[in-house]
Length: 311
Ligand SMILES: [Zn+2]
Image 1 (cartoon, rainbow, N blue to C red):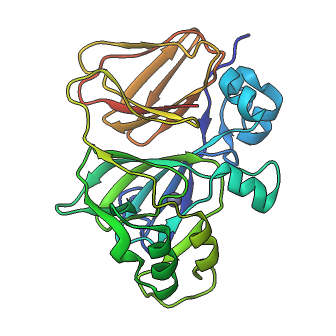
Image 2 (image 1 turned 90 degrees about the vertical axis):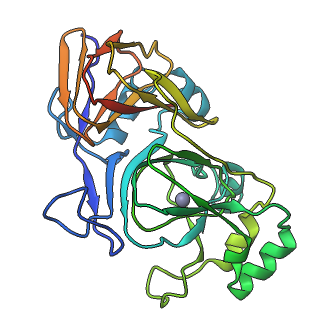
């Protein structure tokens, strides 16, 4: 019996900077963890199991050959939706090599990508450093709290997307709903917190930040592709992010054993069907299609848009 796709129970994070769009009636909701190794499967043969345990058991059949060749039977990405109503702290993440030096084998760095689902007028993010900023500028400005002078401040609008490699400073601004995919890692260094009072768990990580910030990395926000049923938005060695728009015809997809497909509906509703299975998905629902699944079909539907993560 071939594997069938999984629906995972969403997890919510109610941070103070959240809003009311991700979980109506429960405000502030800051984050939805849509696909994560510690999410529980809803329904089917694996109901009640954690994704991490299924990944260990099924290995390549779930994850695909690219993932297991690179890192073994470990679910490699975390997919979140974020409802931001204040500036988030300016952060940086170490890369895989730095994490191995700091914490040993089995830990990962964090490269992430953002897709802007909805933005207010004049929405902005911080991503990367301005041209000409040197490591000496970083050392000085992180220590004396003037790092904003070195940060690239960029306007964003709905449909834009950006890849944030490990070593790049970044912060989401107020008035945006964001889809985020990242390497599954929780190592975050807080570089600057807008001079908010330092409370438990919100301290700055000055020395660690200085160590990992790389002012040589360029970070570029790109605009949404126009009128393309399948478009690759971002790609790196850890994951790829595609936008699927089955508006004019069905989209046929096939994981072909290489990678799982993590689908998230970002607009409208989607009907996804394969051999012996079918799922109806609402906006912000996700579906995890195992790498060993045969060809499947996302049915033509007006107003339907999805994001697809592969690894
Ligand atoms: Zn981050």
